[in-house]
Length: 70
Image 1 (cartoon, one colour):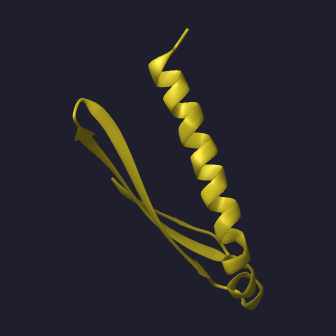
Image 2 (cartoon, one colour):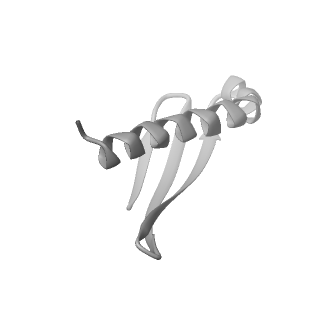
């Protein structure tokens, strides 16, 4: 699945792949962010680690919901 989000200050292109590995599902997410403003071009490298951590937290919550919906 591919999608694109755009605002006044940033463009984000993302791809998400679901892969079956020995009965398990692996999710691979690729993001490419480009700043449109001078400020965002400076700040994006600083946000990289924060965004990665947030995605890991979101996927952990998703996994918990899918595997144990109760």
